[in-house]
Amino acid sequence: MTDEKIRDNFDIFFRRKPAMMLVALKRIARVRYGSVLAKEVDCTYSHAVKILQSLEKLGLVVFEKKGRIKLIKLTKKGQETAENIENIKKMVS
Image (cartoon, rainbow, N blue to C red; front, side, top):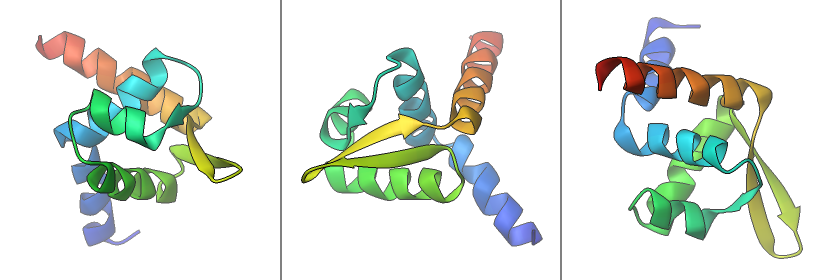
């Protein structure tokens, strides 16, 4: 992996909205709708979709298509990452 790619991946986790999305997905362990998740982390639907696409590329979330609706679910790697984010949050709170 290039230094720039590593830096881009690192930056995703230390931005508030992506971190909040992972934690929100972990907190309620069922699959979620993008619109509901966007409301929970206080961002627009289009911004949430962009973040979720980045998280999907990293293997942290998967999309499950149910008819016209896409549901979002954490992968094992996403679950572990969300737990680590929660631990960091507890340490600095």
